Length: 336
Image 1: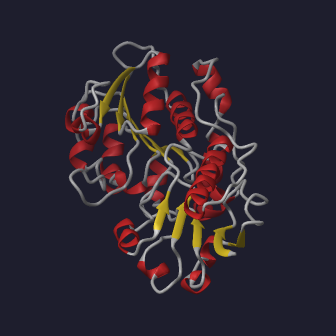
Image 2: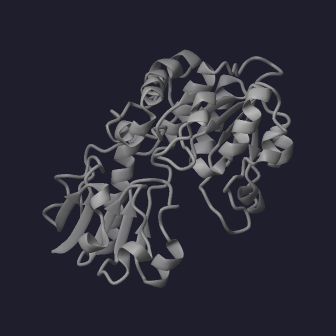
């Protein structure tokens, strides 16, 4: 049997693959070079970096993450060493949209208040598309910044650059990966130059990756501009800057996408990746399928479906417990 080293916090997987693989479920911190040295595959979450330090000299030929992001993968190194890498794009998009809209509404954004309902969406991928869809259904004026999508010829939106967007919107939400190279790097995409452009009282949502927003620049400008910050993903997490936390209106420990259905889709993506790589058949019975737009839909239903404030209170009381709070979070239902 091929040996798999598996982060034991990946849900909905146990009982489906043990008859096909030699499964070793371990804590994320215990996924070490020694633990994976004789493994064929490694199944991880965002905290496990997959590249040379972990995998060099091992027998690993397959890695998969139960997340949409891949910034914890050294993809060039994995490809150079013929290691099949897999993620779960779009799995948690409805859950993140639920988080974003519940938080925006609680922060005072009124999608039907003409002249005050401009929402900027930076990155119209799986998450941004749903955020935009819900926004239009609610009556908001949607503005989209997505240079890669624009350059690829997608004509479903009238695009705007981030510099111009920042001066026009009443709220802005980021939904990009974290990249430091390439034509459109996103590290500190929301830079001091951009933050200086925001109107007073602008709502800023970061449920993408911590480094997408320059938190030091936020700290310099939030008091004077009365910016309303909603932060789920933090620079340096699981450590949180206390001053940034104090300036934040809604603060949560990277749980925006932690819906039950989103976690099921992520595990389903891992299952299908295992099937492709190893030529096996694995049941995904009982796991959530693809996203379908909610049939019943209103601001009140969104607010009732998820309330971030109890989570905010726990994080403020114990910021050092970020990782424990994240790991023990009880997966919520999406807006169905």
